[in-house]
Structures are given as C-alpha cells and as structure tokens.
Length: 359
Image 1: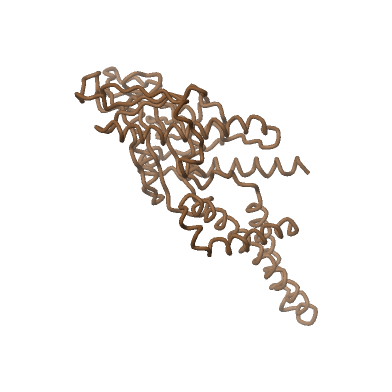
Image 2: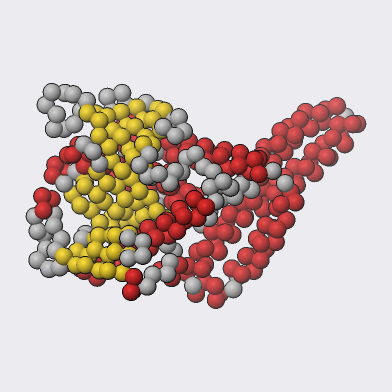
C-alpha cells in the first residue's frame, strides 16, 4: 500500500510548485481544479506521514519494552494507533469520484400526486436549502415554476461551496439525492384524514467549472423565446423573456423563465445545459466502465425510488442503504447529514470491494 503512495507524494510536490506560480491563478477554473487535487493529496500525505511516525514510535516502544515491562502498555497503544492510521490511509487511497469537488445543479420536479406532490416538492426544496446553509454552502434559484397552494411544479437550483477538499464538496454529498422521493402523509387538501402517497423527483448534476470545459457549438443549439407565465398559466410578463434552449445532438432541453431579462434567462439556461451535457457524457463513460467501477448507491436510473418520508410515523427511510430514523421533522428542517453519510459510507464500501475484486 505504501508503494502506491510514492507517485502521489511526487504529484503533491509538483502541484505545490505549480500553485506557487502566479500565472496559474490568472485562470480561476484551472486554479480551482488544481487546488481541489492539492487538498485531496494533502490529506493522503498527512496520513502517510502519520503512519511513518507511528511506525517509528511503535518500534521504539518495543525496544524499550524489552528492558522495562512498563512500556508494554505503550506498545499496545501504539499498535492500535498505527492500525487506525493505516485504515485511514487505505480509505483515502480509494479512487475518488473526480467530480466530488464540483458544485451542483439540482432539479426538483413534482410527480404523481397532483397538488400534494407539488407541496412536497416545495418541502424538499426547503430541506435542501436548510441543509446547504448548515454546510456553509450558497444556494441560488435559477428557475422556479410554482403551482397553486404554494407548491412547486419544478425548480432548478445551483448549490455552491468554497471548499477545496473534494470530500467536503457539494457533489460529494448531493450526488446520492437523484431519484424518486416518496411521501406518505395526510395532504392539506384531504378532508377525511386519509393518508396519501405521492412522490417528487430529484435530479443532480455536477456543475461545469468553466464554460470552455464542455464544448457546445452555437450551430447545435435551437433557442426559442416566449412569454413567461405564473401559477395557473397567468401571464406575468408582456415581453418574450422566457427562453427554451435545445441541444440538437443530444436532445437535451432546458427552459428558463425566472428572470425578467431574456439575457439572464439564457445565461442561467446555458449553465444548466452545460451541467446536463457533462452528466450525460459521464453517464455514458460510467456505462462503459461499469464492470470496473461499481456503486450500489449512485444509480444512473433516475426513476429509482430512493427514499420514503412517512409523516404520521415521523420516519425517514433510505431504501438503498437501509438507513432508518424517526426524526423526520428534523430532517425536513435540514438535518440530512446522517442520511447522506449512510450513502457515502455504502459507496465507499462498494469501492473498497471493487478494489479487492480487482486484485
């Protein structure tokens, strides 16, 4: 295992030199990418140095224990510390998702269940905003299509972080949220007190750092403009400010009407379009490499039912990881970390297993 660290130590040193060059920071996209990799490697270097230091301490304690039995306890303590340090290093050496440090474009769409589904989509939006706030992330609503009764038909939101450590990145946490979220509760519109089941869909895409990262030819775009509308189809704008962008080669379509300016809607639409195209490219690559890179948590199938929110029982259940807790009220207020950590842990175990199978 320690032999596999040496190339990473050399890369870490090379990055240190590269980042000291002021010309690198003239390109914010490149600097951001290099800083992420440097932070990832720094964690490995620190863990590697800790293993080396504890190995020396253990050897010294064993020598002293030969002459004085009082040092036997220190030997045991150092053995435990070294075991933990080796395990930490081993986990850090698991190949990371290269997009973990990226920001995220999230979409929430009401599904089956009509008005209740739209209300639940609004609850999910609030939950994710509260969770982002607890992590120190920033959120920006790119587009929102509201329904009657205060619900949301669909919403697109950017979630951004200043963290350089990929393990603390937005994508590293929110990539597991894509799928169907099922809710069981008594709807606000229910007069008989019956529990209904409805659902909302969540899509997550890693956001492109720089526009040049995803090559899009203007000739491959069809851009339609139209008047934006509010709840119930009521016109809220007298100009053609809403924008629909279609990427002809892939058929991916993005519509934006949140801003009063056509230019602003177009810029927001292009952000989402680039993220979707990047995600489509990565999913195609993942499909090709599926035998080498397995994950039971982050499924490409966005129709997968991933979680149930049972309000009468105050229960949250993740169907992929088996996580279950009876603090749904806290989760809906943004206390989502334990749920997400269960997915991160399961994904990590799957990656470890894949490494073991490859040997």
